[in-house]
Image (cartoon, rainbow, N blue to C red; front, top):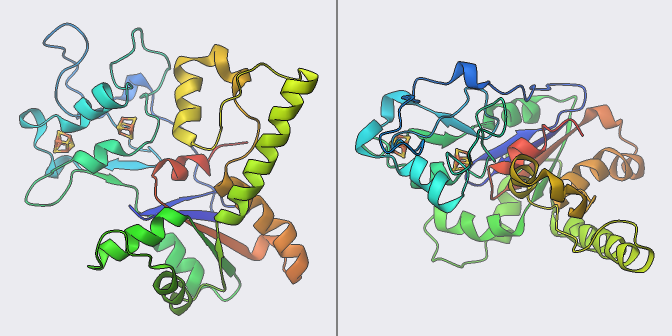
Length: 279
Ligand code: SF4
Ligand code: SF4
């Protein structure tokens, strides 16, 4: 089981054998109420709420807190900054197109300080795992979260809060706290080796693109599928960690992999999407 908490929340779950949410996306036939279906300027951009599938693994839309047509910050950032919503014509997939970047959640003012667009909260899943004596709960933390955490608790921007983070996680009951930097190094080694193979042996096209960002991977799949062979075949650091937790870590510590609940504290909502991918 793997779960990833984003610092902008807790990111996702790639549970092996316990909970396995299906990444079945809503189709264009089941657009949510936030979609007005209109396009005042004829471009498809309506300036209102960006459409959000109810089962989006990264972002949840709360209609009751939305300013609707008076705002439109979510659809604007999605179209004009991320080049996703309504930027492309024609529609590229039979689903509500989203690369799970979470930028709409970052700009959403909501109502009375309560955002309408929020990252999917999975802390209850992790709390349940921590309370379950059958699980060995392991957590990885991305380096960016150690700085962001300090700001959340009033430390000055840039303060390195690694010690506080590790202590807090141990107090919460995590059995092991590890650093995603370890698998970031593994990713670099794997990518370098793949790059050399491409250059020396011509095993795949150049240039080679990184595959570490799940939003970038999804963006390419939607809009530039012809370039997918340029993408590295390596897993991201988060995904490599999850694999090692269930294999090497389990073997070294003599733990049944099915009993390991793997959590990731990440700075990005797309990590919630990544861990639910079939592959
Ligand atoms: S998560 Fe990113 S791609 Fe998806 S709707 Fe929000 S801004 Fe657009
Ligand atoms: S309040 Fe939030 S969800 Fe509603 S239109 Fe504005 S940015 Fe979008």
